[in-house]
Image (cartoon, rainbow, N blue to C red; front, top):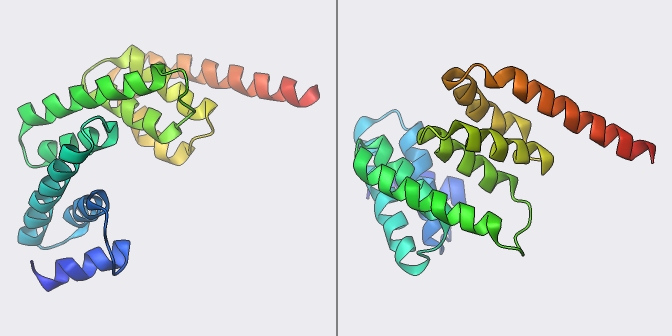
Length: 176
C-alpha cells in the first residue's frame, strides 16, 4: 500500500482504524479526491475489498450494499452495481417498513438516490420528501433533487407545493 494513501486514510479516520467500513469509506473518498490515477484506482479496488469483507459480517446492512454498488458503478461494473443497488433498496425498504424504525434522513436520501438510478421517480419523490420531514440537510438533498427534476421536470412544481404544505403545517403547529 503506498504510504500516501495510508497517510490520507489516517487523516480521514485517525491513526487507529478498527472498523472495516470506515476503511472502505476512506478509500472511497480517496478515490474521489486523489489527483493520481493509479492511486484512485487502487483506492477504489481496496474500498471494494473492504466493503465485500464487511458484507460478510453484516449482509443485511443496506448502506454497505449501497456503497458497494457505488464502487462497482464507478469502476464500470454496471451489472454488479445494479445487483447490489437492488439489494440495498430491498433492505432500506424493509428497514423503513419495520415498525420500530426511526426517522433516518440520510438513509432516506440514499434510498431516494437508488430509486432515481432505477428510474423509480415517484418512489424517489416521496422518500426524498421524508428527508425534509425528518429534518435532513437540504444541502445534501440538492444533488438528488437536481437529478430527479432533470429526469422528470414536471415534479418540480409538485415538490414546491409539497414543501409549501410542510411549511404551512410547521407554522400552524407553532401557533398552537
